[in-house]
Length: 101
Image 1: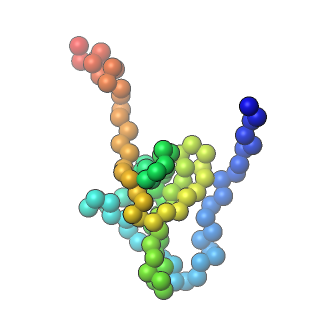
Image 2 (image 1 turned 135 degrees about the vertical axis):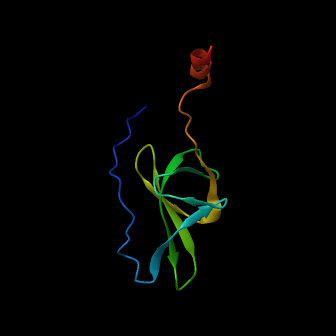
């Protein structure tokens, strides 16, 4: 199998948008999500890092910017495509049972 080429992570073009684009807070299941939170998107197995939520005041559309945890690629999706917040366990179940017993 051929090796994959390394790709540089390219940030989303924030300056291309006009002055009608602004940042808003993301609330998911009545919780305020802070940048850096790990999340999953529907129909996608990857885990993404939440970066920002933006809104276009002219059209009223909102979207969420994510960065891939594995290779740093950027992905923008609508808020209804968010599946869940990923909670990392501090230890595996086996380690916890060994420590307590």
